[in-house]
Image 1 (tube, rainbow, N blue to C red):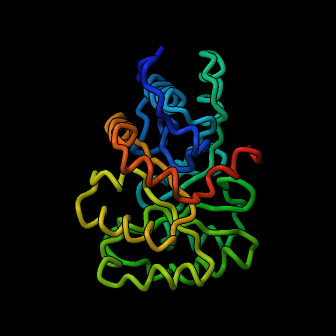
Image 2 (image 1 turned 180 degrees about the vertical axis):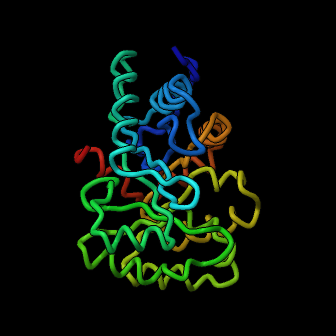
Length: 247
């Protein structure tokens, strides 16, 4: 139904297998707007060579106060749509948890977090300043047996002039996830520079599209026509490939 790639185009993202960060469940956040939009976004990822997709709707107490049950209800609707249209991709939902006072309440309430796979939880912060709850949240997550993955660290401008913070996060057991399109310059030159430095230093663990809409997909697809960027991703030991067997 949605054919984004010609038969002549050989390059795709099958070497990654799994995309671990996207917003493809309609009606939950600033991602997919309706069922048709969900289908289009997910179909495009399948066409791009991904064999598994972990979608991660926002859980943000101030803007997107989604609950585990609410997410699972909408996820099952989308999964049924994929089955009805015979979209050949493994599909799982986790969540992207904003580290704020609402998240700390979830920790206190012993929330059963929606995981990317196994015990891995995707978290994020505001782009304006480091969350005052960050280090406590990372500690509490690990104390409960979870492994935190910090989404798009390259986008936190407050770390750009304090690069050692990334190493400190790693030392505290926090894994890092690259927003793949950051290396195209989609978010600006400073974000791209930081992403490239983190790749060079081997600090990333995973990559994800963070796809909300078709513009993100077009930026992602542009990597396939850039030999340099594609070689960079292929050479990096992202852990995405280990996920599919657990989905």
